[in-house]
Image: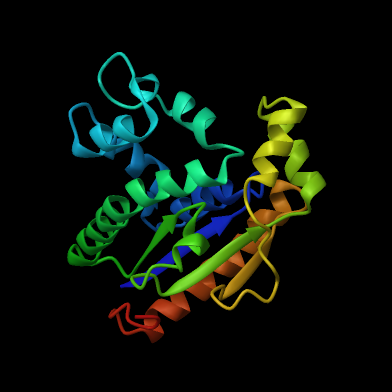
Length: 209
């Protein structure tokens, strides 16, 4: 199975692209939702996060208050490093397991949507990396439209390092600086490329690994 990693900066539109790929028949795993599943009440991950950041990050049900946790780490590189060190190992294990399950049921290709994919390396279980891009002002406008204040939008944009066009881990950049119809056409071309690559991989999903 070809394991596709999909990433992009805040407001780039990677979730929109993920939805279009899902509509084309590819299973999509959302890393953010997988992390949310790991924050279940009583889990060892919740205990580790509370130990590191205090009871304020625990929600009334005993899970994680993600808003409170985000407030602790945004704009604080040291706190963010601590958070990543706690969350990433179990999250990567969970994502690998979910991809393995899709391969076991016979899927030819599957997509992992993950904002932090490039910060992870990307993982050795990803074969083909797609990065959705858009100019900063376009992304800023989208974040404002989504309800963020001007200050929050800028902080969100500043919290993630820019991805250079020459990034060695990216196999394909997908520009999303126009309207939805333009994006649909580009994703249609991308779907063809993924299917061709999946056939070329012979179902082994071992190109990068």
